[in-house]
Length: 185
Figure 1 (cartoon, rainbow, N blue to C red):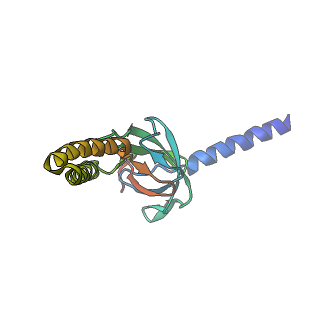
Figure 2: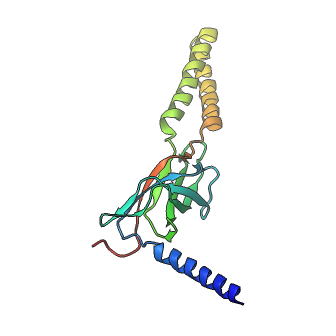
Figure 3: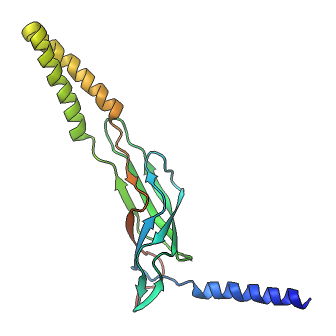
């Protein structure tokens, strides 16, 4: 019986200590984290969670409240895969906990490269190559036909290779601002 009571007291003390050590981060606190895994707009889904670690000590009123290396967690709040010929992929994430404390934070986003320049190069290059080959083979009429065929081929290449996903690589550093909690004094 005494053993059970001692175990309960020890568990109660451990829970109380962990609650007391959880620090509420004030509104406006900047938190720098290092992502634990790669996030891509091609595979991520809204609501998906991710792991991270605090990259720099978090200091509030001259005191370190969360040490570098402490765990952090977050979730994907928006993910849109890239289209083939337009609209690059987008992914947005937020923090949900830092050092064991629940938090709300600003969103951090990544966007894939734009398609415009790449597509113009592929389609225009295909048209130019087709016109050159057609011109050499059949003169002016051949150049016109070759340009049309080259444009179609360039468009096909752009469609086949055109996905530009947003990627947040593993070990990349992201900076968030806490949006919950009390204002700093």
